Amino acid sequence: MMDRFTETLRQGSEPDWSAAVGHRFVQELSAGTVSDAVLGTYLIQDHRFIDSFLALLGTAVATADSFAARLRLGRFLGVIASEENTYFLRAFDALGISEAARLAPPDSAPTAGFKSIMREAAATRSYAAALSVLTVAEWIYLEWALRAPRPLPPRFEHAEWITLHDNPAFQDLVAFLRSELDRVGPAEEAVSRDFFRRTVALEKSFFDAAYA
Image (cartoon, rainbow, N blue to C red; front, side):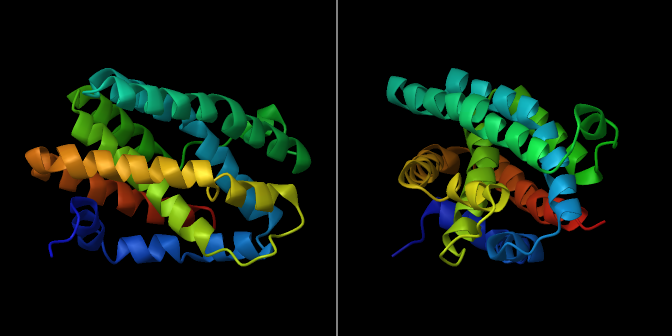
C-alpha cells in the first residue's frame, strides 16, 4: 500500500521534521519550564508573520477548487484573526512586553524567511503551493502539541498555546489540509515538495532562533 502524498512529503523533509516536532522549545513549553525571555522572543517573532499568513490563507481561499474548501479555509482565517491573535496580545501583557518592545527587535532570519515563503507561495496563485506551506505550519504544531504531557502547565501563556494546537477543531483542520494536499498536490509534485521541504526547515530554524 502506497503512503499518502503528505506522508511522503513528511518523510522527505527529515531530519528537520523530527527536529522541529521534538525541539527543545516545545519540550520546555510543554513542561512549563521555558524561560519568559525565550518565550517572549518566540512570540514577538511569531506574531510578525500573521499578516503574511493571513494573505496566504486568502490566496488559498481564492484558488481552492470547491465551495466547501473555501468555507473551511475561511473559518480558519477567522480563527487566526480572532482567537489566535488575541492570545498573542494577552501573552504579551502577561509577560510585560510593551508594544514598543515588540516592535524594536528586527526580524530574525527565520521570520524573514517565513514572510518570504508565504509571499512566494501566494504569488504562484497555486492552491497546491499554498496548501504545502499551510499544511506544514499546522501539522507540525499539531504533532508536538499532541505529545505535550498532561496535565498542562498552570500558566496560560504555556497551556493555551498548546490547546490552540491540540483540540478537536484543530485536529479536523489538519486532517482537512492534508486531505486537500493529498488530492491536488500530486499534479504539482515538484512545487509541493519544494514548498513543503523549505517550510519544514524554516520551522526548525524558527524554534532554534528563540534561543539565539
